[in-house]
Image (tube, rainbow, N blue to C red):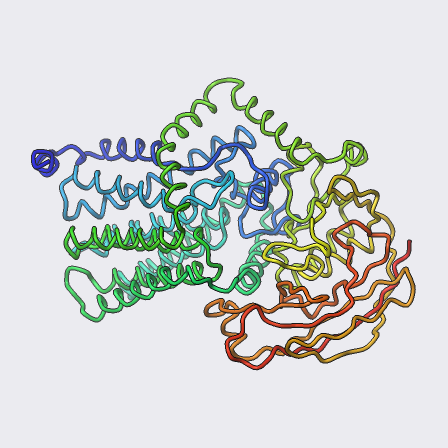
Length: 636
């Protein structure tokens, strides 16, 4: 062991650029832990299918499609959909891993021998990548989030140099800005984070360097526009997509927030200890750890903590853990032993939060990663092998979905939207896809997004193929009420489409003439706490009853339903069963009683009583709301 350490400290291997490039390539091939490369089924694989299908169907991002991923989002997808996309995605994914490795290595070379830097950088990259594996099915590494860690490492390089050159600082910040523009079109929030890291680094390296700050901003904007055009999108649609994506991000925290469970305590303690350590390092002002480096890490930490606890799960918290690990590895102080103890503590807290499955799954993924990477390269290189995998995957998906043959025949070559989430069925059956812009109805967090879906569905889609919920009334993710999470979309489906059939948990709707009358107000009622009121009965069988909820939130509700920490969530109670309430759309009247023409579909609902509440009380006064009831005629 001593001989090996002596060799590492004395050999010059790793000092040449080609040697570091070779090591980066090997690392990028080996460090690719993922569950599968075959397209899966479910919520997450469905949005991966959307990212792959959008360029194939030549959909315009903004008018036709809205998501927090962009037209280059397919680059982060590990699953096979098309050959060209898989080749480009493989290049992008390997480049991200290599950039992280080289960034860590570059910082370590400031104080370590070349070979020692390579070995530590490899171990750190492998550990971080393994922690960043997503929560299952066909998803692999969180490459956009990994790119943030790579940018942090590169931004730290001039900050940890005793006298960084102006050219080094300029090139570093501008390149991070350029990559941020690319990342914006891969995943919206990671592009903004990269831009924030680049601009913060520029300011911390000298706030008077206005030219460098402007160059960073211009690089980010230029890269965004150029990549948008390269992706085949119209420049006029860029701001539409940016505005709609910003709306999704704005509504995400509250709509997706779930009350923090008890197993979040280790992660919370980790976050608090890390923030305290950064504050201590800043106040102490040690010359070995410059305040500008601590501040940069602090900026990245604040952004990451908000994301990690806005919707707590192992997937989101792993980004915070990765940030802590990268920071500890590249920080020039404390000693190697203390740094090792710190990293081990962080990883242990992560594994405790995830339980035994987190350890087992990531260990298996890391062990199988080299073989999977080689297999992926062979699949892309050997003629016919890729196409065979695609056909096998589609066959498995068709067997799983089992959409009735006469539904597929009826749709034919005409356009179809699939709800609520199973977009993968479009790929499996080669359907002509024309989605509602916010293709996953659970993402219509705000009225503007719901309105966008409603208008698009009414005008542009011939059929809607709907996966029928096993619950009645239909529920969405996180225990939501399906007709409430996107009320305008549900009304558009009821009023502009006719249920052509329900079979094998699939419902087919065909587009037709508008068949709904105007809303007629039936009355109002105040509801509080655990109380409930009766839902007015429809005046005739062809009438639908709707209700709008005007909430009266307390200051505690406003702060702890996602703004600061998600400790409680609002609920709506129908016939004694509580559902997660999407507050952004609560005021818009949603269906609570529907006519028989939608029996057996996700639109069917026959509520008799309704109330409001919370998933958890924090000592505030009982939940209060005003209910507005309406009636609407629905022609047969």
